[in-house]
Image (cartoon, rainbow, N blue to C red):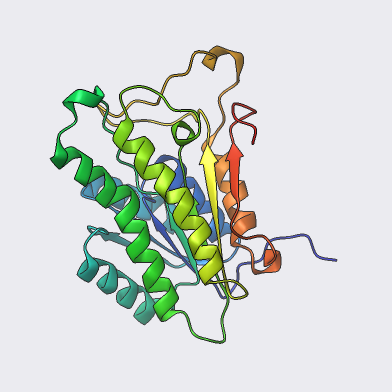
Length: 247
């Protein structure tokens, strides 16, 4: 029995793959043999650095700046990847936008922006994979959730609501794709990352009781859920949090 994860012949798209957890996931998928494309939002320097990092190996890499909450942008990204690397068979939805602010101060504009990036984008990308994946292929969708959706924290009601929706979307995708496209959600705990200004990690009263994890801890689990050999695991939400949350 072969226990190694082999993604040769797979094409992976990592949305939010320019830094931190997303970039580690892209590196892990590439190391397992997948051709990899990454999408960033608006930071060209971060995208260039990520593509350069991935290009140091022998794998094929594409990079895009795109608004994945816009239907036309999603369609173009998938079409461009398909033309160069082949149809996307592994999709990782890992967009990052986590503004903080008291509930009463959250504007409708900010609320809508969070949902566009964190929930509408994954919906559109997942739908595109369903539409484009050849009928003779199997696929995998991995959504990156958030701990505060399961252990709510203050000042992030919009993020909590969107991440909770992402867990529900995962189960819906698993039901829709049963037997061909599996979907799972991975929830990182307190992971050592570099956050943008105004988007700190959530704080819980018992943070000091637990060690922080690494981006690679999350990437290893994504890798397992991406493997076509693990076709029987779908519709699950798995926490990579060192025990901060136990379902």
